[in-house]
Structures are given as C-alpha cells and as structure tokens.
Image 1 (cartoon, rainbow, N blue to C red):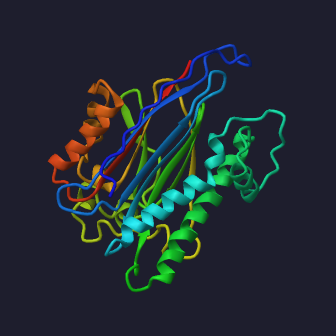
Image 2: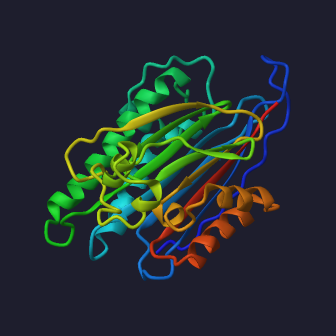
Image 3: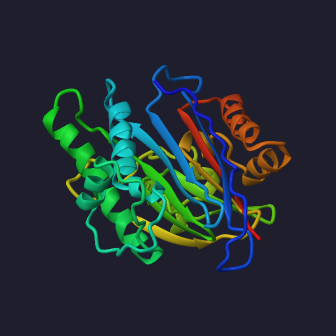
Length: 303
C-alpha cells in the first residue's frame, strides 16, 4: 500500500546555447493518503523529471484513482500507472541529436532493454499521439486484468489524469473525474473536464455546482480506464510560464476542499512544495477525508 511518496527535483544549471538563456526547469512533489474513512488506498501517483544543463526539463506526472472491490481498484490503478511508465520510459533517456525519430514503441523498448545510454526522444509534435497510444495501452492492461478475473475484478477500473511537460508546454490527458488544474496569477483554473454525470448536469445548468456535491449521482463517472476494450481520451495543450504551477489530484481532494481559493492559499502560503502537498492532504482530511487523497504539484521555473 502506497501511503505517501515525495520527491523534489531542482537540478538544472547552465545556459541553452540555442536560445541564449536558462532552460526551463521543473520542481515536483507527489503525495497520496488513504483518508479517514477507508483502510485501503486505491490511488496511485507518479512523478519523474529529467533535467539537464542545456535543455528544457521534461516531466511525467500521473494520478490514478482505482475503483472496484477486494483490491481490484488498487490493482487497476497500479496497472494503469505502470503501463504508462513503461510506454513513456524513453522520454527520460538523454537525446542523441544524430538520430532519426522513426522508431515504434516496441523499438524504443528494445533499445532500452539493450542498455543503450543515448536514445533519441521523439519531437514534441509526436507527443500527443504517443500519449493517446500510451493511455490506450493502459486501458487495455486494466481491461485484460478484469476480463481474466471476473469474480474479484468485476467493475474494476481507474480514472487517470496525467501531464507530460517539456519546457513551456504541457500536454494533459484525462479519463474520469481526477483533475488537472493550472495555478497562475493567484487563480486556479481547471484544465480537464470531468467525465461524470453531475459535471454534465452542472454544465447544462440543470443543477448548481453546490448542488452537485450532494446529488445522488455524485461519484458516478461514464468514462474510465478498463471498463471497455477501448477508451476515449481527452488531451489538452497548455502553454506554461515562469511561476506557473500544475495541480493533479483525485476527487478525494477537490470534493473535500471545494473552494479553489482555499487551495490557492494553501499552495501559495506554503514555503515548500512538499509542505503544500501535505497541507492539501491535511485540509481534505480535516474536511472529512471520505476518500483516498492524492496530489501531484509541479512548479515551472523559466526565464
């Protein structure tokens, strides 16, 4: 059971000779907590950052909220995250500028297995396609797990929100009701769209946002990883600036800490990202902690 995971990276130094300025850097932290009412933590979080002295940092950030009884949700979110890590592993191998970019996912993994130290990373224009393909692989992994274990894994699945950040651009993928927010100029903006019944009711004006928290269909989502053999993935492009922050979280946070201004104040008043993440978790627990709580915070340091 993964109760907490914290890692912060701020390592890049030097000047990018192509741009004549410091490369973009990333600082990140991830934390997950079972909450107050559940013994089992079915959430999974992951963050990894590659920094170098002369290139923009690249980072992969994932939050997954598993669902299903008798460990099924925990296993579903585990398979989702591990599959994504495997499919996108080449993002974190230093570039070889002499190489071409026409390698398949299987060829990338074969090169990694052979112990190559300089493997080319695909150009950014390919990343959206690769993210979609990776999420499809994650969906297939969760679906196959449930299909082969119909008794214990019936109804299992996982939400997903993830971001790949390379320099000033973030590509964000989402399935379900875990969220990614952008914090800029003291304002918290939800980038992703919840694939839930109540979100649709709010968007259509049939209920208010406040009413959605107590609606009988709260928590009912119509899209997740693993429920069907294929999945529709939302992908968003977000340009980033120096000082921007991304917040990825499960509904265990945003359903408990409902006022975005409260989240902003916690993040901005905390002296470190690590403390900010912990205080967000603490705030969700103080409000009831009815679900597992997971948070990934990412700070962009640019020029």
